[in-house]
Image 1 (cartoon, rainbow, N blue to C red):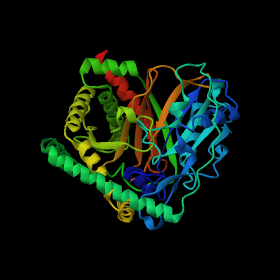
Image 2 (cartoon, rainbow, N blue to C red; image 1 turned 135 degrees about the horizontal axis):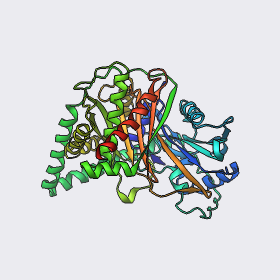
Image 3 (tube, rainbow, N blue to C red; image 1 turned 45 degrees about the vertical axis):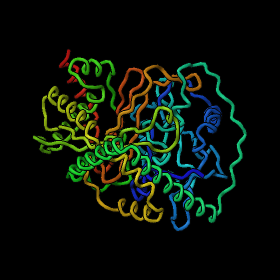
Image 4 (cartoon, rainbow, N blue to C red; image 1 turned 45 degrees about the horizontal axis):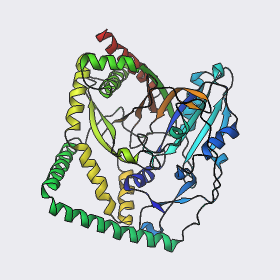
Length: 457
């Protein structure tokens, strides 16, 4: 039995009502489309490397411990990998409309919480995969998403063959309780060893504690940030828009003005939100939008492992600055200060502390947190570097890749960014009812990127 971490478990507790906590992607391929059986075989050949895709969540009786992953004895890939077809002419807008409807539906948490839709009928002989995985499975930045294992930089790679699989027996209630109590004892011993290590290395422990406390103070100062337009109740429907920019252009801006590729990407998002707010008649002078920026804490040797290894920063997007060069400079300074301010270390420390919280208390606290209104940030901006060369599945080249970031916690718009093969692709998730005009934001991001490129010529 593999127990969910506090962060993984919290994503399950946040799944309620219209808050659907799955992440995902849309991958577009050059044709011809493969047979469904070929795709199923390609997926099943990788399940030994990502066993989580054949496992479901099992609760511990009386919530004496966090939930565990157990094999799904009724696993059938045809329940998770499904086929559909777009009606002619199979436009990109039709694909986005279909993807939006699919992402509006919650996953079945009594089964392995993932599904992939094989979409045929795109114009020009193309096809697509729409992928959904619950956030408790993968972190979306460096976790074990099976689609990343499916793709290869070589078009003619021979597909592996799936090995026979038999699920392990289901644990009894007594086994679940016993394992939870044993994990509690082991965690206490680990914490005890950490205290002993701190006594033997007081200088190192003091530096870590000081950084954590400084970060907590910094994070506490940002605990409340009211944003009436972007925060509030959400409905069940989603709208998923896609924007694209050239990575070479973004690097040209970065090299000319300074900072990083991520600084330019965040500045483009800030410019997009500025245009969006203005289109709604909202005042922007002197205004900023608070964004949660996920930060991976996964070590290089942990890449490909399941679960979440994340911390976070709370960044202010300067939508009140009209000049694109000044806006980029403000973003660069702000993100640099945040990275050196210890906020990510503080959040990571809080998650580590949650490991020793008894399961029942953790469940009650997580349930309470899920019910309280959230006013610390107004959006999410997640940037994931991807491969900068063509990738293939079953000898078909990926021509586009767009991320999906869930809504929830009173967020009406979130943005994911992934770079692939010379492009920077933005996936914009919006509440269909609260933000029906999200295409204004999409155009604003593209226009803001082009504006910065024109500045450096």
